[in-house]
Image (cartoon, rainbow, N blue to C red):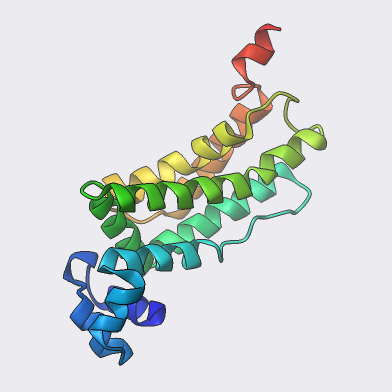
Length: 185
């Protein structure tokens, strides 16, 4: 079913996706889809969780390289039309359905927690200050990328990857993401 949804999203937008189209594409009866996922959003939320979990968390031993690899992976993922369709569609659905909103939020929070390893390891190696908030590092890295994809509805080009990595790297190294309470202590 997830493969069928992914194929459909390669052909058309999230708004055009229906349970009937998924049933035709997958060969599964609509009632079976409804029983397991209830809605198109349910299928696509599971698809997002599956696809998002395939993104690796870089561990090169170098903070800048890790940021670069993570940023490039996010760019590659979001530059694929069907992945962008999934994300844009889910966010549109989340605006009207608190259940979808919570599932999408949980998926992003889980992924952010996974990739904070990059900043935590950079702290351990002495590349960035000890009290750096790893979530803020990842938020600074991801924000311009998702702004480009979701607000401007554009793709993530090489220049954006480079400037985002450099801005995040330099900010982290200079202590911008040090927790304020820890900085004052």
